[in-house]
Image (cartoon, rainbow, N blue to C red):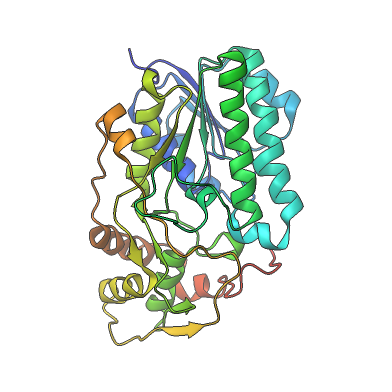
Length: 339
């Protein structure tokens, strides 16, 4: 039996983008039960529509900071995946709340899980802890100089998980996913990301918006590959106490991304509009994932261009029209925006 098969699993932030795909994968891995804790501030119940048809999956619509509720759940949990967080752009307009969720909650949760005797604890961090690449590809020993409170708070959260392992031998591990994309990704509000926003604009015959010169690049990894990688690490005894990258091993400039998206939407005529750079924007992220491969045999499966084409079709199939989606996009989503 694997770490997941037959286990009682708790996923914080499991109604979010990556979290909901992780829940789908956990069901496929035959978890005995999956309890999702999510206050639906950025996640949605719709993201779990398929998973909630399975009697093993339950959504608790509560804030993970409600410690008494979490304490009761953890008493009946074997494996924790901690994904609850607030994002990069949110941290620019509300750094205190961002820290409270990403750092303070992470400390509280890992301590609660340790006291409850959870047998595997997976802290899902972010490549944003690195800041801009000082060399590439970036291995786990790359210096951590985050550009934003988000990156700093995620770094604090993962440090607490490592401390629980080093001080108490608690079976915790840290996963650093690079930039995930795919179905259920956010286009709206301060969670909106470049690929879904660009797709929505293209479907509305609007030009892509690029902040700065567009030569900044990211390691875009399909969300199904990200979810697979997180579970593979949870299954690996060798990963306990470790901090491990999950990425594709290739980086794409934002200029190139805009071309791939407009081609997939059949609107190559839409030329990007360049605006001033965004604050806190890292210049380059590119994962070095040999540690991940050595521990798990993991390799990404989804080609970037194929993944973008599939995502364009996913957005086209939504019951909400592209025009309605466009109305929910905030171009300057690092400023205070309504949720």
